[in-house]
Structures are given as C-alpha cells and as structure tokens.
Amino acid sequence: MDTLNFHLEKPLQFNWTGKFIAPDENWTHMSRALSDFELILMTKGDLYIAENDTEFVVHEGEYVIICPPCHQHGFRPSQCTFYWTHFSYPGNHSDLRIHETVSTPLSAEETRILLPVHAKVPRMDRMIVLLKQLQDCNRNYRNVNQNNYTLTGILCELYSQLFLSGGRITMKGEKHQLYTDIVDYISWRVREPVKVREVAAYFGYNEKYITTFFKRSAGISLKAYILERKMELAKSMLTDTNLPISQIGYDIGFSDNHNFSNAFKKITGQSPSEYRNTYAERMLFHQ
Image 1 (cartoon, rainbow, N blue to C red):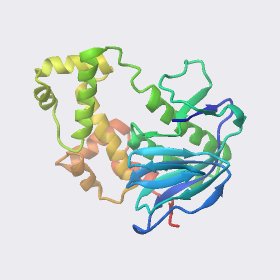
Image 2 (tube, one colour; image 1 turned 180 degrees about the vertical axis):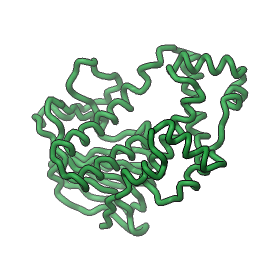
Image 3 (cartoon, one colour; image 1 turned 60 degrees about the horizontal axis):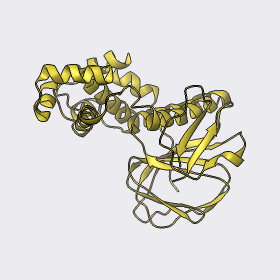
Image 4 (cartoon, rainbow, N blue to C red; image 1 turned 135 degrees about the horizontal axis):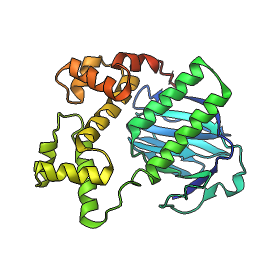
C-alpha cells in the first residue's frame, strides 16, 4: 500500500469540503480529471472509486486519499454517505509518494506526516467533528489561513490516530492483549449502559484489578474512558444527525436525558444543544 509523505513546513491549502449522500443505489461517482487531492471518509456504505487504473473499495469507517493529477471515476454503483475535502499540497510532489507500507511513527522532531492512501479510521467520531468544524469555518468566516490550518490539523489528527494513539501503552504480550481487548469490548458496547464491574466480569477479573490495570495502562480510569468514548460518539451524532437530543442520550446508554446533558457538559463544557448549534450547518452535496 502506498504511503503519502506530506512535509508541513507550510500548511496544506484548503479548496472546498462537504458531505455527500448518494441519492439511490444506482449512483456512481462521476468521471473527471482531478487536479487536486481529495480526502474521502466513509460514514455509511461502500464507495467504488478509481484513481486512473487503481481501484479502491472504501468501506464504512475507512478513508482514501485520491492523488492528482489523475482520472478519477467510479467503477460500479455505490449507495453510500461520506465526508470529502479537496486540498492542494504546496510542497514538492517528487518525494510525496512512498511505494511501501509504513507502520512506525516519525520522530517527534519531524515536520512531516505519513498517511497510507487507504486505511481504516481508528476514531471516525473525532474526524467527523473536525470535518464539521472545517465546514463551519468555511461557511461562516471564509478565512484562508484558518481553513488551511484547520485542514492541516485534520490530516495531523488522522496521522496521530494511525501512528501515535497507542503511544501511552508500553506493556507487551498478554497484558497488551488484555488492554486492547478491553478497548475493543467498550467500542462494541459503547451504546449500552456498560459498567466497570461488567467489564471486569466479562474478562474474569475482579473490579479492583481491572480498574488499576487500565489506569496504569492508559493513564485514565476505565470509568472515565467509557464516558469519554460515549461523549465522542454523542458529539458525532449531534453534528451528523438531526436526532433529538433525548434520543441521542438514550442511544448511547443513558436512560435519563438530564443525566446525559449533565455528563456531556461536564466533559465538553457545553450543553448538547449548545454543542449542536456550534456546528449545526452541514454542507450536503448531491450529484
């Protein structure tokens, strides 16, 4: 898998952005000459898209970066939904593409980032919130510098998710496997009212041990981590859907809207309605 090597002495240049919803199951991506980069993040369905002769099947929860200059086109119908943003790279394109898979992070002193052209997004909820923020900046301010740096921050976030998100975890072997299993279990049950004692029971440990183990491993208590993941999901639902706030709270495991609103404000500093109003205007495009 090719990797893109972006030098960021200068910010990337934002061109435009939006969210796309396919009108029906017969929609196929347009055929066009692409003269800038396009980042696509899939939130629903599968996208069948090609860069010249290279075909990508981008599944829900994945991203792809289509690189210029190329002939971009769909190669089969795609009923899907995705966020997209076009941008230009102000640096030298000659060393941009690395024809290999890179799996290790760069040193902290580097002023560049590495991104596989196609991969799974570890934290799509965070990416959706940032893309909504980019849309909001572009719609309300149209400040070139703000848009460029916000876009660059989004690509840096993606790099951090892919290469740095496990940086706090130093254990190996069975302990590392237990940590990742707990994280996966919480992701699986994040919409339920999951409790620490239930996590401990599922993995066959007592509550005190699992609490201490997770705190030492992640630098955050298991209870706080569960709440953090729920609030990240709530933020993406608030900005990416029109569901009532009470329904969103219920969908992430809160039986009482008052408790959900209090928990959300404690984490974010805003009520759910204040947060939604901050990034309320989605930019939808239909082809």
